[in-house]
Length: 303
Image (cartoon, rainbow, N blue to C red; front, top):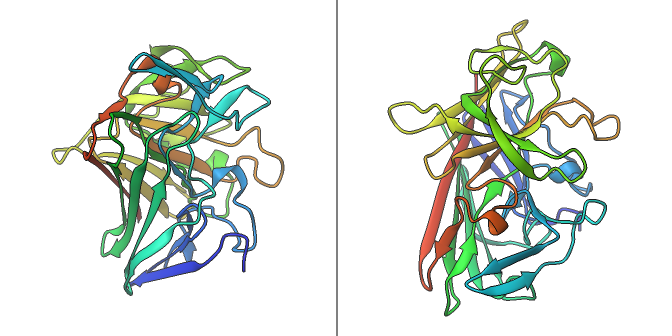
């Protein structure tokens, strides 16, 4: 068996994607043979969380410790060098196929109650290809007898082609950046991006700008969608990532701290329903009542 488990291929027109049993991760997505995401090989352990789902929290929790309804919880420190609990509890779980057609695959996973997160959740994800590209629907149902804290995200790395990231143009429809400390990458404030080097509300080249920040106050269209675009002006090729209104945050990461050859090879644009340390701050955390369901949708298309 490959390191990422069973591979689920879906195809529609010029689009093709492969989703893995391990973590229900988006391993590849192409359009007419052109990569839209920077993925990983089936026998590779996903580097830098490529394509993974981040549930029941995205990003980091300081010291892995938080208080919910008066009870303190302690999670394992899965980012020990920074003393954080990172990216949830299902990155490496073996998800089960619920349905698989030519153009769509749905997977499920029961996250059992455990130390630090004593609630049982039924999780689901559906990847579907259509004329407008890939649509991803992530969901959760609380099977416990008490309310659970919940947030979710995903970790696709976008690519506009084989040329340098620094020549690509980024359009990021966000008015506010979350500020974080350099050592632990945890929020310490936020600022208006106007006039700063991270203001990409008008498309412009990345040109050496290093990004590892959460962004919010997203500009949305009439359908409530916020769309980030990465484009190579030399070819006109690129990729859009859109998020629905349940996702007020995008984490954008140029991988400057990754070892070669992963450094600045692509740009992670991560849909998030809450930002880093949300279980401690309470900001945008969903209170998932017993029996309640929650769902978010995002997608990727070629340009």
